[in-house]
Image 1 (cartoon, rainbow, N blue to C red):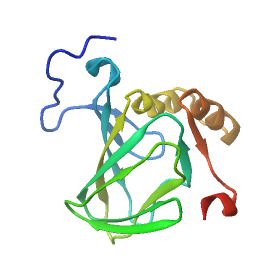
Image 2 (tube, rainbow, N blue to C red; image 1 turned 90 degrees about the vertical axis):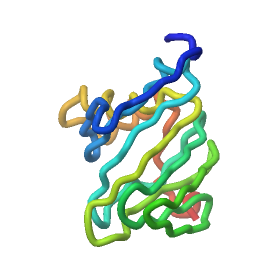
Image 3 (cartoon, rainbow, N blue to C red; image 1 turned 135 degrees about the vertical axis):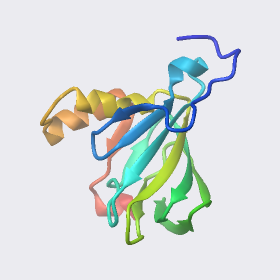
Length: 152
């Protein structure tokens, strides 16, 4: 990992693609920022989004680049359109969903960085089972929440 003493940047249209659970474009990695943060963009089809989950180590910042999204965090819902932002604290039960009628895009910044590697790790196991995905998620301090009481 490098020391974060120079600007980390990503030109328009640049980034490294990952395709686990849709298209993700990794724009800045933890390696580029001395572990301080990671940044990626997600393309999310209408009606889609991840299940409830918890990041045990990272705070997340989301910015809606295109479309409309609902965000749930610890039982509260916030709807945001293009340009809207939300910060989700580590340890919170949260999820998001594209509530628009077309493909949506969000930018995600995680701090500290490292979680952005999750998508490539899942890509590296073609046809991964839910158990395998859960094991990979645990390596990134991520757990999925399927218990309705915990998600409420």
